[in-house]
Image (cartoon, rainbow, N blue to C red; front, side):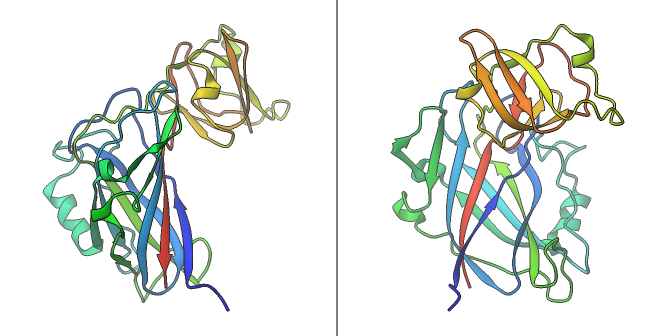
Length: 272
């Protein structure tokens, strides 16, 4: 018998990570969640919440919006990560109205009630909805459009979307890991046609990379240039290296800070 319980992991992309967020900033824009078709109850949420410069930070409250496609169209963008929703170039009344038919649920995450102080893992926090008595369950029902689907996994699946808003501000996902390259060839974008370079090795200094990243993390530069997924790391006490799974295709600059593109991971428990 197939279990009616399942989990889904969601890793939203954040940006401008060397600048702390402020209240009402958009944490992340609509991020797809692919689940089997049909209505499901979003019961629990667990979170990995990255620290600052390799040290755990105090997690901040988050507002979550959930949405569905309408007539085969995904919800319109709410703006840019780490910009205020009230900014004219981020969220206008027209965009908000356009998004309204798509929105199916809202949830305020009282993160202070979710933190289990006994599971402070030094460099980051693990948060769980089971930890706070008033927040035992998410109590949200998710269901995508019944007439269309936008899932990469085929017609048996549906896509719903989630966006996050900083409720109180103060999130700081800076790493203190900076690029330490003097070779101009290493700083330029690799030629996509150059098959002699299958991986890229970045020399770094600052914070010990092993205190900040894990294998498989996708990293970006402070200006938003996406450079790749971490294959391995080293550190000799002063400098370190980050080996990417493939050659980076974005130009990078010496002394730029290197950040985790997905510093918050959500692990949802769903029931059908």
